[in-house]
Amino acid sequence: MTTQNENVYDLLIAGQGASGYAAALYAARYQIKSAIFGSVFGGETATGGLIENYPGILEIDGFELMMKFREQAEKYGVPIINENVAAARKVGADFEITTDEGAKYRGAAIVLAVGRERRKLGLEHEDEWVGRGISYCSTCDAPLHRGNVVAVVGGGDAAVKGAVLLGKYAEKVYVIYRGSQFTRPEAVNIRQLEASPNVVPVLDTTVVELLGDDGLSSIRLDRPHQGSDSIDIHGLFIEIGADPRVELANELGVELNEMNEVIVDKHGATNVEGVFAAGDLTNGSGELKQTITASAQGAIAATSAYHYVSEHGSACEIHATGFAA
Ligand SMILES: Cc1cc2nc3c(=O)[nH]c(=O)nc-3n(C[C@H](O)[C@H](O)[C@H](O)COP(=O)(O)OP(=O)(O)OC[C@H]3O[C@@H](n4cnc5c(N)ncnc54)[C@H](O)[C@@H]3O)c2cc1C
Image 1 (cartoon, protein in one colour):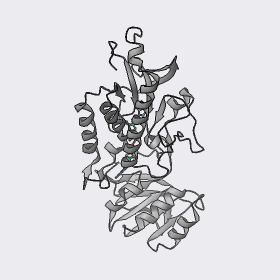
Image 2 (cartoon, helix red, strand yellow):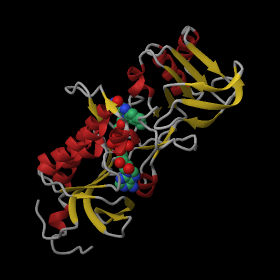
Image 3 (spheres, rainbow, N blue to C red):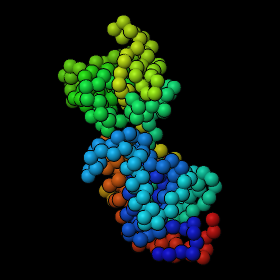
Image 4 (tube, rainbow, N blue to C red):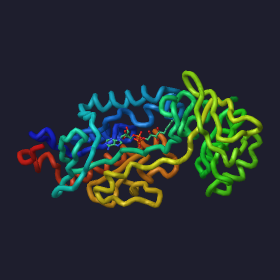
């Protein structure tokens, strides 16, 4: 499956996160010609701080872990193109993508691995202090807060579940929500929250300021809680949802579920032939959106893409002399 045309590939992979790199590794080992695209290296894993639940590695900084993912792809010579995919469309039997710098590439198959956009509070220092007191993932970072005082912002199921989990580690957990009651938590989770003596709901309240020097040390509220409008905390977990990045999926006609996640089957295939998807963008691992599950999905999607390319023919062979970027 070789080509004379440098912008034609068997597989185009959008997203330089765990799912994208795992897909790149597997594609390379199947010896199909692939390239990985993205202007932001490493995805959420790279900025998520300490990782203590990636099997086989006791603990590692997320950025370092993603560097290892990249080294592995580089070892197999996978081109890493540091540009986002701005547009994707079907052209004949292939797919054509255009990067945000205007370059065009063709591929017989595509893996969408572009993750999700975490919803933010929109406060000063919020981005800067991720990993220094601010987290968007209770499941991931709860064990880092043994004996600490922390707060969760949000009133949905993820916030309630996160607070219960944090309550097992932290000394005290405030759950700050702007509404007067939590919205749609699963009954079992709300019961567990009520049974957690160190979890304190703070309702009808909004966080208005993040305070600290080189990281978060306290938060200011829009109304006093027990006589004070600020609370000293070691960690703030922002659990107000995440939006799958579905623009490319929409352009390609890929079906989404009610949570706006790309629907994939057990092979990582979408409803559109030749379009595969992996990681947090998808419904593939249910609620367990983690580096391990994203990686596994990337491997599965690449395997399916390999079978697809083998059956349908490589874009590289078809376009070896035809397509010019
Ligand atoms: C604070 C935090 C801490 C975490 N800690 C842990 C942990 O301890 N353990 C654990 O297992 N998991 C952890 N997670 C979860 C884990 O990071 C994610 O599940 C994982 O990164 C998902 O990988 P992904 O490849 O699906 O998506 P992502 O990591 O989000 O990667 C997607 C990539 O695609 C890129 N992209 C977006 N649009 C485009 C485009 N148009 N073209 C090309 N590229 C694009 C993005 O910039 C990004 O680089 C944490 C998450 C957060 C937020």
